[in-house]
Image (tube, rainbow, N blue to C red; front, side):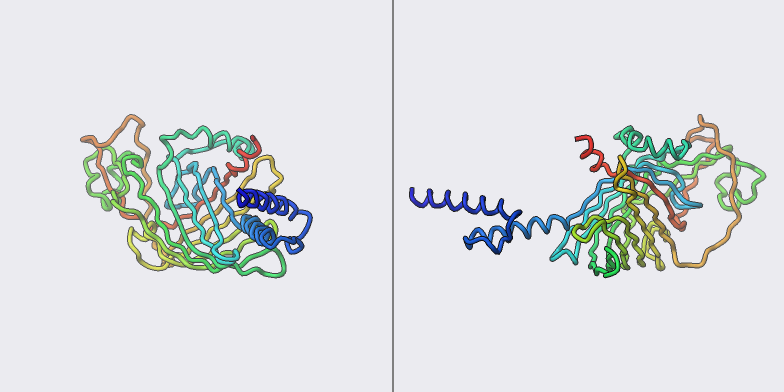
Length: 327
């Protein structure tokens, strides 16, 4: 009974003195156990500042002739966790895109309604494609501004898209010699359906390079802007296999945090470091909407594996920030 009373008194003493740590330094506490608990609690609270995660919902579209020519709504989860004092960190990102959505609204209206439009994406439209990356970084603070220079490495994969959901239908022009030469199966057909190849595994990638990050302040891990510059290999743009070097550029900018809705801008470029090739363009008229494949008058042609660079630009909103404001 006596031990229980002393235990309760000790817990109450430690709890009282821990609360006092906001007004007095832990080193000034008299009780050794309370001092140790206070220091441990302070380290835990300081460590929590170094954890960072975000949940973004947004819209992304291609730039120029890209491997992903259609716009899509997407969701991204990014997390960064310290391994030691916060300098060495693990990080990871998962991006999931919806089925393509073409948007022709004015920019001002589109941005104002972005959060609503994301919420209106149907559940069965999510998961059209996805990508994940996991890696390590070592942050090296620079003295001029709250700015970090980080060597990074990462490995990840991109899911193949479903051919049945990505059929492009066109009319066959019998006078088009380029079409007949490239795709002899179209000869004598009225329409042609182009489909991506069926792949039974993910497109893998690995990369190494640097990350430049500006932080909102030195005490937290919350990035205000970041740029990743890496070299590696990526099967998604090198015909489904590891072949040649691939340069990846990825940038993120967190716009004014005082905005009513936290907004991010993103840009990504994945490019083969190889000589470009020129071919005759293949221009065809779209098929009527009632034409389906397979059909006797439709030639089904499988695209060759992609060799196109991937460039895209996106805008997103911080869904966690929205939830916090609503609550």
